[in-house]
Length: 496
Image (cartoon, rainbow, N blue to C red; front, top):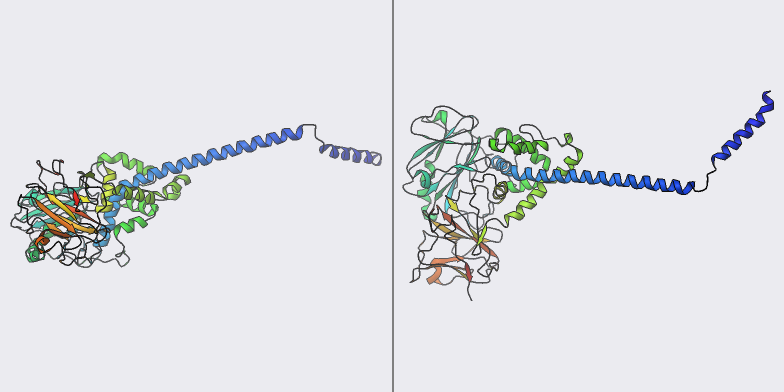
């Protein structure tokens, strides 16, 4: 039976298999159209997914840039602290934590460590750590000499500024206490409450040229820092601990620019724990948390959405580019000069201005203590050039209105001092400047000497491109005043 049906079964199988290859008319076109539709749908889905991913990356980058702008002052303060406290004992502008470093002389034209240095005051600087206990700042009687001791918190806001303007020039004691400290203070001291445990004290003492060094050194030696527990007792500051791995060569700004976003956010998260912002900024902490920045916790990009993590990668680079661009437009243009914003040292919620100042002028004073307009162009809005001669004319009784003193400092295009035959880097109100018969005062600005009869008023210029900064210490607060704009610096006029 089986042998009879085998040929038939085999034939049926062959016919069936042959039929599998047959297609009805029009089937090929329909399949192609369907395939095209499916491919188009897949392409659209892919494009939509890529667009959504890019949108998440863009949104993350925006949030990351805002985080960098917000946290930059705190991070650069810590980088600076690490660099200038990493010594065993005070030297130059560096000193162990809770100890003074006194600058004993002005820099000359060979000095390139800091841009836009001044030759008006000698510095006395100290980084304070208030986490263990308060520190007592003691100042001597300066006998009327102008000085100021601004105390800057970790966010670069100045919370107190003892000195001639605020506390006079008699001897005194100030106890700097941290945010969590509570206790009794000894009699005869004034408490200065810091919002953060990290504090940078950048003291300045008026110095009228090298001949004044000895008198200023005596005052500097009278500035003391003592732990509250040792106040009134014999005290010797301990030797500092040196970290051999700390970068002591690269300037803080350059260190910041080289940081990856992950390194920046990790450092910011660590610093936020011990230096929290004001309670009013809690919503900002929520924004930071949304991109993985949590006070006291390690920033781990792997825990984030991959697109968010990718978007955050360029946060530091993009933020730095934006801030450096903004720095070129900082301040209001007034007669060619750029007058700094009056929020310096007390920024409030102006985080952009705070970040720009931390980047280009960390340690800026309160406007009430000092205002520093700078000029890069002449009266015709042309760049200042040493190939030309210029004059700055103050009308009678119209010199910079200050309670202390003023100066104009010359800088190269790179913001360093200009070498010159009389070693003069600034003219100042304490100098024997000669006035005209009508009572006006003219500052001669040029590369070559104007002659012995005019040399007293000569500010030697760079033979190439140059710029200047007017420093007004303790500006008047009533008209005429630069604080309210009722006094304006005069234009820089190019001579024929």
